[in-house]
Length: 112
Image: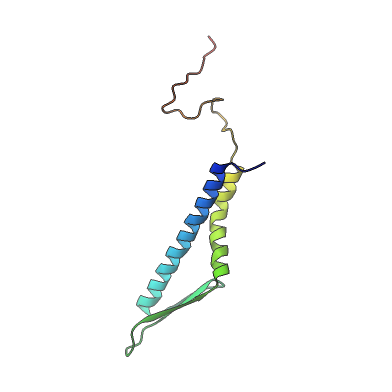
């Protein structure tokens, strides 16, 4: 069974969205650590060390693992990818050739 292009598109988009979510969460955590001068740690993924000293400018140092961040993104995208690949070709309850209820000019015969 080869995956159809629409399903592959959904899996790729799910991965891109998950990467975007991870990046945005990382930027928010860096901003919080920077503004408050605190340390925020996510075990095995990243640590955001914010320093707020009276004599120096505020800084933030980010240390982390790119592989762990990639694994987190894949784990976030995995449920939608599984659903997209497992979704049946024919949806139960739909007529055989009908694609959409809107804009369709094809009519089904009633058998009268």
